[in-house]
Length: 253
Image 1 (cartoon, rainbow, N blue to C red):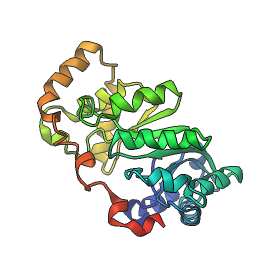
Image 2 (image 1 turned 45 degrees about the horizontal axis):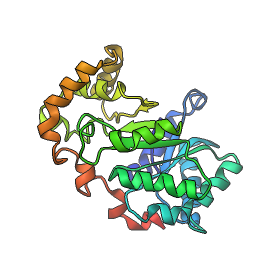
Image 3 (image 1 turned 90 degrees about the vertical axis):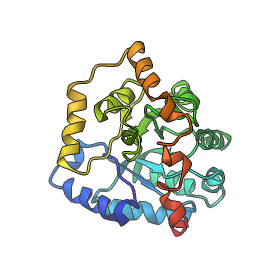
């Protein structure tokens, strides 16, 4: 169950915390994200997430929105956020550590390299994977996914629809878009669910799923090639539409 310290100004974690009471917490793999780049701010956000989620531990905590070139430097600097995550793991507040981002595959690769330079290996990476990203424009599928598979790092796919912008291209249906990503070598496909209708859509994708073969993948890529050329439907790469920390720099600490 995916979440973030900043989603809906904390309301998403509060709602999930209420839903996980009465024995449900033990049945889920609970994950959330923090924005803090300093040790002090990251520690504060971790404790706030634990309180909101009404739990004594988070299964996976991820550094959120690694979208700037200096994010890796700030996180791994002395007094940086990563120190807070390591301490939280040591004390049992969190079990696993990863990071997320959506802007540019080169920033993901830099985060992985900075971690390695500091003697650390992330257990998961959350990244955009979708039928538009399957082409060459700043492609996470082509540039980052092979590195994660090589290093046996968990692949958390997101932005299957790119906040519905990809669906506005009128080149794929929601079920086709989900089946495309489910056919990639991912650990899990994360899809946002905000209405019962969208929940039914996700369940239908699972019920009808059969891994796409190469000819089916190629046909879908051929169909979306023109729309994908310049990232026009991948606004998470080309605009600040998704960049919550840019609009709220105080979250970073």
